[in-house]
Length: 276
Image: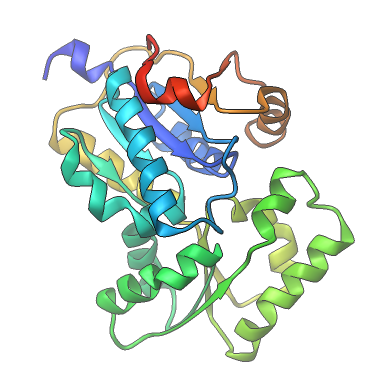
């Protein structure tokens, strides 16, 4: 590959700030890579959308990222990974990676009684159940749809007593099943870790698929000779609504406010790539 191709950005997208957990992991594992981060904040949360809507949104976003010239796309959204990855990855000529299989493969190495907390759409898809059982048919899997988590996180209500109450409600069935491993089936959920750890037994292992998605991305870049060997460019952030709110939450979760943050309309998403 040419130096110019290796210097292209990696595209990461999510409905909002959840994908920042993937971005944070990418900074750790792939510090030389430049990133274009897309947050579809005008249409969040994705987890209560229909499969048709998720497929439409995913097609639009990946099509736009490809027009912008990214060299790889990380779907930093479990709902999109569950409902759209297999349908879209053959449509584009760049690697498109999702969270489900890396997360499932990691989970079966951690335990035998696996709980998955996810958005309602991801849970209903059974994507994690299928992937986990494919990796190890001997394990048991329980899934819980958690419709209120993403809105509470996006509204920065982590310290609200109601959030703890909701978390307790969602986790109770998994505690009753005596799970030994918990999978974050949504990239927003690592922000809840202090709450979740305070409710679950201390022996429970936590699996963050973001860690393993980036590991897969690193291997793919190496195989395809796409690693950037130059100084990376600052991350460029694009959102479809509420840029100030996104910037405030980025400061909280990334430790800095985005230097390059731009809002684009949903209509521009269809036909106006940006210079990256």
